[in-house]
Image (cartoon, rainbow, N blue to C red):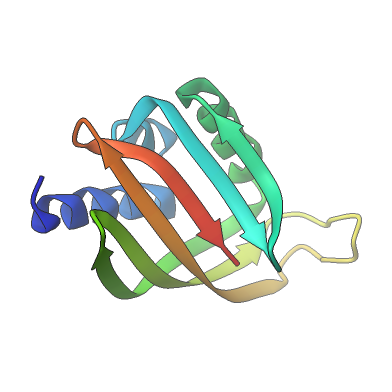
Length: 127
């Protein structure tokens, strides 16, 4: 699979994420996709399988009134795609930790995308 093809899939996936279109996101992942989210060398979330990935996306969909994952850079390393991003979002609800509806979130992160069968087989988020 060419890097151009991989980049195209990642961009389509991120566009679907920004639109909160879970069905479209699922078109680009394998049946056994692995997703992990890490911060400060600690795994916060780790799930396996397309149905678990779908449930995770559904459970977080209503958290933000608006969200946009902005690609800052793309690198191709050992068959994988690494992207640096900035998430800009507005919370849709009050949270127990003191975050209020309407509060803004701006956070930089990196993602590692691994491919199999021309689909995303592993998505790792580093915050």
